[in-house]
Each structure stands twice: as C-alpha cells, then as structure tokens.
Image (tube, rainbow, N blue to C red):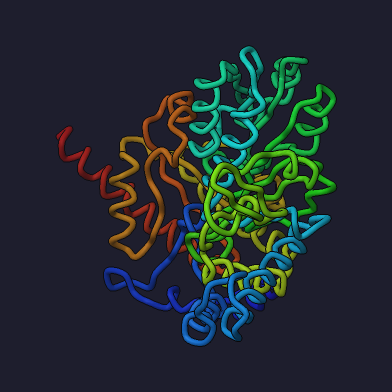
Length: 424
C-alpha cells in the first residue's frame, strides 16, 4: 500500500470515530491501545441509539411490532457474523458477552461432560488468561492434564515441540490465532490438521485475528472459534462462539433459563434448537445489533485492505523502534513489508518501568498499555514482570507513530537525565 493509499484510507475512516477527535492533557489523542479494546465508528453508536429509541423490546417473545423489529435486527446480526467468518450455517454462531464467556461455554458444556482422568489438553505458553484459567478449572474437576507448547527461537509458537506433545491422549488443543503479547500469527491451519490426526478437538481464540484478518472458518477447520465484539469496533458486552454444527448439537446447555428451552415441566425440560440452546435469558440485544453494524462497517472497508494497511504501519513502527538501542522488542519481527505479525509492539525500555513509561506517555496524549496483558505465565517465562504495548488499528496513521516515537524518545531522555544526576 502506498502513502497515497494510506492517506485515502485515513481520510475515509477517521471522521467516523468521534472519540479520536479530542485532546488528552492538552495534546491530540493518539490511541495505541487497540489490542485491549477498539474504538467505535459512528454507525455502531447510531445502531445502539436507534435500538433504544425506536425498537426497544425483548426478542423472540412478542408478536407486537417493536418485538418483531428487535428480533429481526438481532437475528440479522447473526447472519452478518456468520457471513463475516464464512460459517456454513447461521446456527453455528452463538452470541455471548465476550470471548471469555464463549471459552467458558465450551469448557463447561463440552469439557466437563467429555474429558476423563488422563486426557490431555494442549495450550501454549502465550495464552491469554481467558484461554487458560477455564481449562485449569476443567483439569481440576475432571482429572485431565494440561500441557504447554513453548516458544521458538523467534519467540513464536514452537511447532516442532507441539508435534512432540500430540498423542492419542490429546483430546483438546486450545490456542490463540494471534498473540496479544507477542503479536505472532500462529500457524492455526497446521495446528488444527495435526490435532485432528489424533482425533482431538481444537478451539481457536480469535480475539486478535477477527478484527484484523479475513476469516474462513470452515477452511481453517477449527471446531470452535471465539471473538470479542469490543475489539472489532463493536460494543462491550458482545462476542460470539462459532462451533461446528454437529458438535454444538451434541453439547449440553451451558446455562438454564428462559429462551434456551422448548418445554418445561416440573421434573424436566427439553431444550431449544441451536443456537438458542446456548443463549439463556434476555440477551444483550442492543450490543448484538451494534456488533452487526460493526461487522457491516469492517466488511465495507474490506478485511484484506485493512490487513494490507496495517502491514505498512507495522513495518514503519518496527523500523523506528529497532533504531532505538534502549528498546527491547518481544515476539517475531515482521517481514520487510510488515506482514507476518500483528500490528502491535510489546517492548521494554532499559531502566524504565513499563508503568512509568505509560504514565509519562499519557501526559503527551498517547495511550499505550503497560502490565502483563493477561499473560502472566508468558511474562515470567520472558523474565519480565511488565511490558509496554503499542497496538494499532486501521484508523491509526504514520503521523501518530511519529508522535509516539518522539514522545518515547523524550521519555527515555527524561529518565536518562535523572540517572545521570543520581550518578553524579
């Protein structure tokens, strides 16, 4: 993508995001915390407002006009998400509050009812806590055993070690598609194919891929895929689980209550057809409708176009960071064109704690994240307790990267000046 194309894309999208046009501490906002949550375009905000102002009613339960309109919009969002991931059936999409709930749904419904003592669950050391803690619960209650894939020399998924961990005891492989800390794009197609050779199921955490990459889940051949709406321009409180239809049909309900039933008697109940079997109670109607609007927005831009633009931003960001000797970067380096990894940089600065770094950057209006990014085991493995992370999205620009780099250099100079005064 050329600079002219970048300017065209930036000019097209930035006006759609009201939150980006503000000052923080007297400076124009630079929002580089997109891996934690993305900002919302006006179309998503308007979808939320329209539902509450025009269509506010419960779904599936009423025949009056408001309920019918709300139901149509809610179920229309399911069609949009299904098309977004190329699902074979709309019934393969289950709405959840977020990816964490989607993983817990699989853990409690499938994991607790299927796994036996000695069965093995393979995770990676780079997993977000949301794709680790639920499987710890399952292992503790079923007697299943957790095993972990380590890092390659490039700090990416160690595919050769993974091959060695697989066995006929492997019942589940649960890994992220893109690491929120290392930024590596894991070879999920090969991971899935190898697991299926042993009869294992595979869950892919797509929180960092769904907002950035074109998805074809049937071609990927994962058994389950989860994502959070708030990371893909949708509202908080929205997410989804994709599952292969026969597998979802075989799984027992996760929660009991209204919506997920067919008939209820005093001593037993029968359950609704998919996907409603897994959507107990009143859902997050407005949020799901707005998630549909977010999917429309991303689709209108084109996921391939978004990815290409982010590759160029990534190449430029890494070019700048690698020129700074005080900065240590984590995760694999991008290719020359910026592809091969996510548009985020996790790093430390010699002599500066990540929290101090983030605090001072905020004084210049630049929002980055510091901490363990919900990957404490990975940080222990890397030998650091905290890192800084700058994560980009398609509405960010080279000019913002320049401001980030300038502020980072000023921050490093500030701390180096303090150290010089202490030593003197």
